[in-house]
Image 1 (cartoon, rainbow, N blue to C red):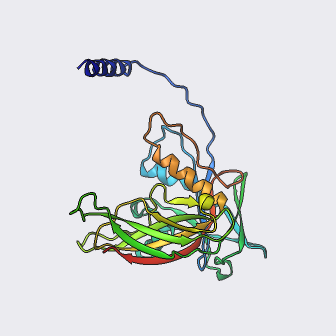
Image 2 (cartoon, rainbow, N blue to C red):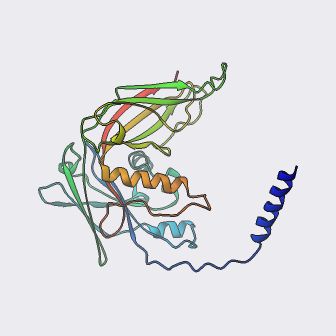
Image 3 (cartoon, rainbow, N blue to C red):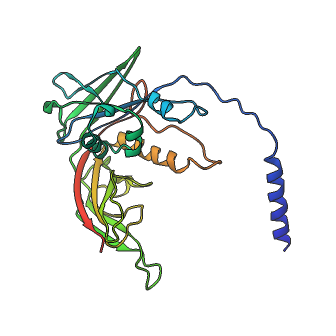
Length: 302
């Protein structure tokens, strides 16, 4: 009882302290260009440009639309000269074309329906991704010049892929996890990121439109180099789900971005957390330019 009373007293003190007016002078930072770009085997590069916004700026449709950068000069060089990317804006596309863009880029379909988003890409098949090639990105927007380099790694296949029920109790068969196993190539620095998308369910729920990757679904071979590694994926699945998996091989630089991004998202609501930007591989700006080695498989959760 005494401990309970002390806890209540402490809580009352904390709450009363929260009533005091606190003024914080936030530093004013100039807007920066943010890059989200990737290239994978058999597909063209996709680059989305936005600008950072102030903490207290609005998030209405006009503000969101204004964050996307238009009319930049974006090129990719795979070693035989730069190729300019075309600007493709979703407002000028058909519904079917917008759906394809959503599937390929992972953009939120509600956002695409609401905001005219411009993407930089190309139909030039000479620039479609190839395993082992290095791709140099260059972006010019006004007086700003951004550059980055990435390589598409050789995809590492999933040796095994299966669903396992959680079974917290003997009769618990409600949910479970997806599991995978790989044979990691010898040599430190192989990194991986898991994406999946539910394409059908036994219960008739809506399919997922885009691939998602939960927290802690990015890892590196620091502790299992050259060996067999078995892992489960963060995020519940249900018996009867059919799930398409995209298992992505990435480089160590790209790994640092995705891991720091996941940590940033996971701590976003933590008042005691330390805010930080994701670890960028963009010179002159923020964001990521990533080569993806893609292995695709499908699993039925039974």
